[in-house]
Length: 176
Image (cartoon, rainbow, N blue to C red):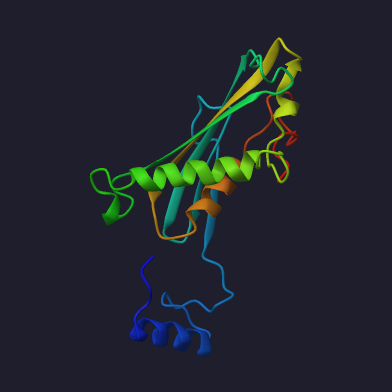
């Protein structure tokens, strides 16, 4: 990790002292937030979230499947995030692949929790239809259209717009 130069430290400390961010907002002022749902008609749930200059799209597709033999009491969840090469100059070419992997992993940790399952946003047991025979398979896809910070927050908010396949008004499996 690269440290900050003395000039950068003074700039940040000056902004804190003046209660001013580099984009003109006060420290506790949120970026403008815009949410649009149902942006991908083929998905069971989708949303576009804009936080200031950050713009992401997420979709959730639910399909009936078979639970794994190792976990017959749990449904399956696959998470994938892509960063558009136009989202930020550093993403040109293959520059966004590493961040895509990191974001996918971070969302997996947030949504599925650790090995114990504690802190999970999605309860895989709630995805069971008939134990050992039928479960819901969730495919969660995210796309970073423009990156200006708070990517994980924006992706999480877009995914949260999903409705459980058992009941359109239910957030049972997304408990976070």
